[in-house]
Amino acid sequence: MKPPSNDYSHILALCELVPRHYTKSVTVVVAHYNSRILLERCLAGITQQTYPVSLIEVVVSDDGSDELLTGVQEMFRGVLEIRIITQPHQGFRLATVRNRGLFEASGEVIIFMDCDIIPVPEFVEAHMRWFHASDQVATVGPRKFIDTTGIDPRSIPQVLTQLRLGPDVASISNRSEPLDRRLPVFRRFWSCTHPYNWFYGCNIAVRRAAAIEIGGFDENFNGAWGYEDIEFGYRLFSVGTFLVAEQRALALHQESGGMSGQQRQRDGEINRRKLYREIPELAVYRMTLGLP
Image (cartoon, rainbow, N blue to C red; front, side):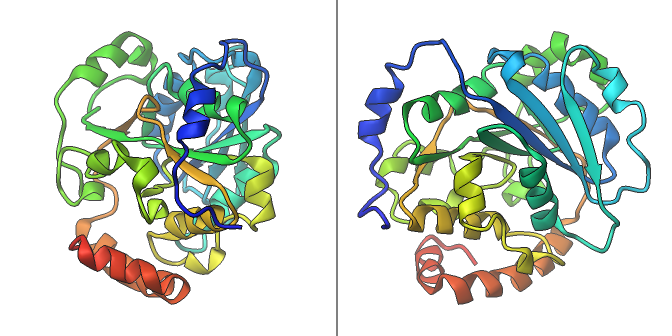
């Protein structure tokens, strides 16, 4: 049954009491396509986590990149348990990429990330403490947009603090703004009437069983960029999952100049139409916010 609201304050109280003796396993599913150096920086960030490394596995789910990821596992051997899976490239298939990672994973909890994310050291722990407090949550974290041009992936452990405290840069993925536009909403997320609207798949966590129970990501969104994550969050929320904003789970988003703003706009229009057919009330909500 859908909760009458997203008020997870009772779970927050439990979460604050969770001792730092963690037992739940987690799989970090990293979606990748033709961005090896971004991926290497991402994985280097995962090596610095405060969560027990013995409870972390990484699945890199590749969408048929031109270049094989030969040598990536060896680069982190003895530090991270990494598996790489791939599929033939047949256009933009992010929903399928994430689903393949989900079904390949063995962790009790799945953290979905994109390969252009560098997690701060407390990233995994910040997500996971909620799952030690409740089985009724899925979490989403904020982004800080950074420029990593010229940074060797091997230097990430030494420059993480500098990147975290450095300047914010304008991002195409954030409507060319430098600060994550979800931050004001995150501050009172428990009172948000449509929290799934802000559930961006580059930095979310969910119980594996819950994700499988609702059928994973809707692959009808393949072929164009955007909104498969919002629809996924909607279905989680609809079956009684509280969507939690965890601001300590900060994702450093590498600005890579990949997909153009024009392509995002074109793709977004296609997938928004699919989204609004599934969730017509969301169109009204977004209109009140001045969103397309």
